[in-house]
Length: 310
Figure 1 (spheres, rainbow, N blue to C red):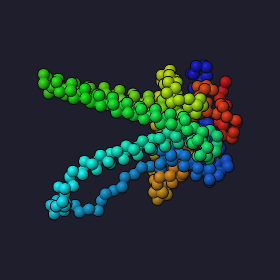
Figure 2: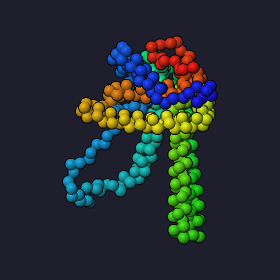
Figure 3: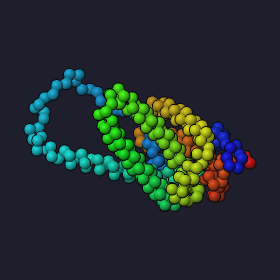
Figure 4: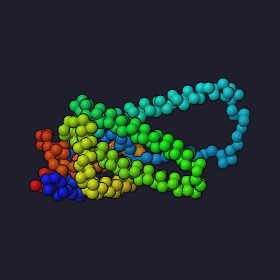
C-alpha cells in the first residue's frame, strides 16, 4: 500500500508495460522511429543482445620461451613502461567518465521516447540537459566516494591486522579475517541493492519534477525505506525477467548468426524487450502517486497506459 491507501501491484504494471510497448513500437510500426529509440536505448547501455567472449585458440600446445624473441633493446624501453601504464590508466578513466556522462544523459532521452511515444534524440537531449548532468555528477561522486571508503577500509584492515597478527595466533587471525570479510560483503550487497534501486527510480522522479539528483535521491530513498518489501519483490521479478531476457538474447544470437551480439544491431533486434523493461519501472513507480507519474504532466498520447484504479 502507498501513502494514499491504494494497492501497489507487481504484475499489473508489467501488463501495462507490455501493452505500452505494443503501442510504441507496433501501432503503427515505424522503422525509422524504431531505429531512433533503439539508438537511445543503445546510449543507455543496452549494447547488444548478449555478451560473448572470443576464443583464443589455434596456438601450439607446447610453448617454449625463446630468449631470442626478447628484443636486445628491452632494457632501454623499461623506463617508458611505467609511463605507458599511467597513460593507459588515464585514458581508460577518461573513457569511463565520458561513457558514464553519455549514459546519464541518454537515460532521460530513452525515458522521454517512451513517455511521449516518439523517436527523438536532439530535443530531449537539450531539454533534459540540466537533469542529465546533475545525475551524472551524482553517479560520479558516489563512485569516488565508494572508492575512497574501500580504500579506507583496506588501509584500516591491513594496519589493524598487522598489529593484531603480532599478538595472536594465525588461526584466530584467520577467523577474524573471515568474519570481517563476510560482514563487508553483506554490507556491500545491501548498499548495492539500495543504491541500484534508488538510482534507477531517480530518473522518473527527476523527469517529472525537473529537480536535482540530490533531491531525487532523498525522495526515492525515503520511498524505498518505507516500502522495502515492495521494492524487493520488484527486484526479484526484474531478476526473473533478466534471466528470461538472457535466454531470449542467446536464442536471438543463434538465429541471427551472431548479428544480435553486435552493438546497436542487437539493441534494435531486442528493442521491444528493452522498452518493456523501462516501461515496467515507470508503470510500477507511478502507483505511488502523481508525483511519481511521468505521464501526469504531459498531454495524453497514445503511449499513456490505462489509468490507475482509484
